Image 1 (cartoon, one colour):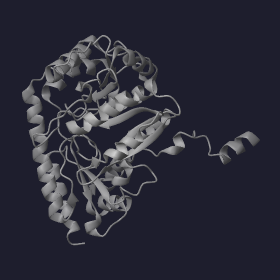
Image 2 (cartoon, one colour):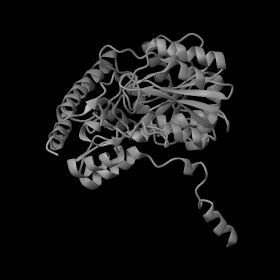
Image 3 (spheres, helix red, strand yellow):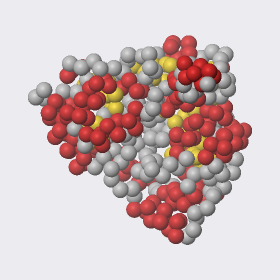
Image 4 (tube, one colour):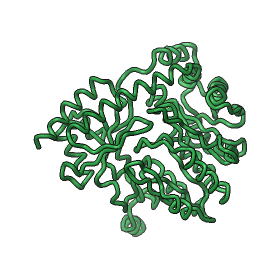
Length: 397
């Protein structure tokens, strides 16, 4: 009994790691949206149907009894399809037998990658603001996150700050481009500096490319692993979720050198065993879509970006125009607020539109996100139009 009391005094049964981060604020805002019957512009999932072809491929796979365990690191058909896509899109040949691991979404791909490559006490550089999983994932590995600021409105980083972040303790750097939550797409000059620093300090680059095909205004996505000297030290994490509007399928993949892939596969095996077999078969069919699909995808989201930007600016928000992904960061200070969490709850309960408070994309001790919120626009026009109508309430308050 004394031991139990002592344990409770020291923080209960939660581990020291778990006490360093909160639950997902993004998913929490979805629950708040449901509680207030608010339009959910918080969590980045489409409210429109996935492509008919990919749905039919999933049905066909189930009916043809692809319902048992697949190979742990992914069906051969899906790995072959991913390798073919990489060669088609970027002119790079990869070995689907030794360089690809299919995971349960990019979320598992990221934690599997970190667990497979990072040791306790290592430092991992993260650009801030960041997708909320990155900080938690690094902590779960027993590593130490080192933050480098992306400064609005362009969300560029300071060259000297990045250089100073690298040290003998640095094991990896996480780059998310196109970026969630900012919509930033890292340009070649920025990526070349990152690559030079990685090579100089013998650091791994973990490149989250889940929004690679959602780009605007002639912006180009440059995979870090295509730059000189980076193929063997870059780990690309990707998924079918955003590109094919199937966020609930949880089919992601990790592309890396054969040596790194061997480690990722071991960790993945003991984390989840494998991703859903019939959905892997369907995803392989999706990767055969031609270039016109990706062009239409960007156009589809560009229209929604422009519509929501206009609606937000009309009611008084100061917004950042995203180059990629499907999120808009907005400044709440024109409304006299300086508390993003309180404002987000007010938006859901009183305005009827759910958003994500900006502070969830920053480390806990930072105040940089207190005046920011994030909207997502991966929604039907009817949804965005209804949200725009509700946002009019902000003008009269």
